[in-house]
Length: 332
Image (cartoon, rainbow, N blue to C red; front, side, top):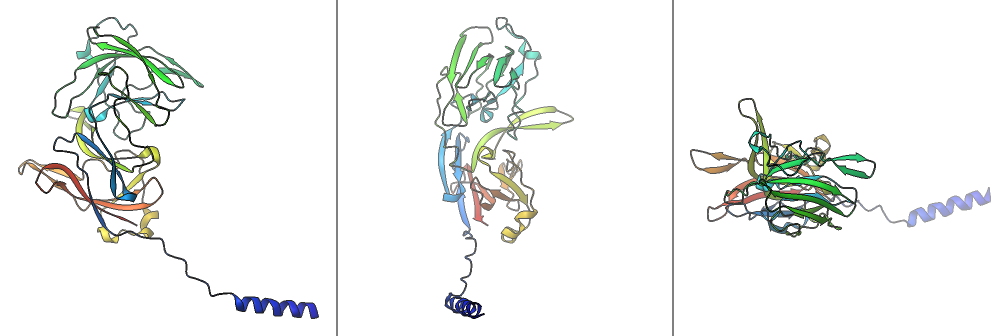
């Protein structure tokens, strides 16, 4: 009993010496900030934004490559440069020699949501475990247009194979002239490898670090499905998200100030690349200019897991030139 009494006294003494509990610091919220992205009046620049540092971390021209090749050792997907409004059609032929009857082919763009299983080139190989055997199908690729609308023309294209470190394919003009067979090494440090038909395989365009950005302002190809006109790829200018690094987006139309952290759990977040897209602005035919819808609020979960709210304010710079999106955003 004596030991128990002494132990109780000791516990009371220790408890009396403990400091009062300190309040837990609240999650730090950010101040409202304003950002801009200088794409140029012809939208030739892709501007990559890191919301956390409130800065454009990378800017590049989009017209210097044609294909995005999946870089992972087991990667085999091939995407077109949507900023050029590139299209592809499968001839379902394996003989590379004849000139394809391209006027009767059905051309498709990559799906704007960015799913690599919804590409225009599609599944060009037979897949068995880690082995990829080319079907040797010949495609006609429409290389789209440059920043001032000049077409690049069409080519024939055939994938010959892929390994853990490279792709091999051949291409030529439609009449078979200027045929080339090239092997392109996969970029070992990037998610995708960029390839240009003009340079014959060199990685022509620097890329931003895959883990350095959240959103990018760029031209890309949207696809409209309408009963009267059918499948229609169309060049638009807007905002894509870095889904490869886990960025997702939800949308609300309540006042900007009313979107708080407590509401996060009620939102449905999308991992589509075009979850923000292009329709935060509308072209007024009568005025001949764009009007921005400031009431659309985008709730963005960035690549680090933080949440932001963002809405657009303008599409013009101080001189009245288009191609400079202005946006207000805040960490929540």
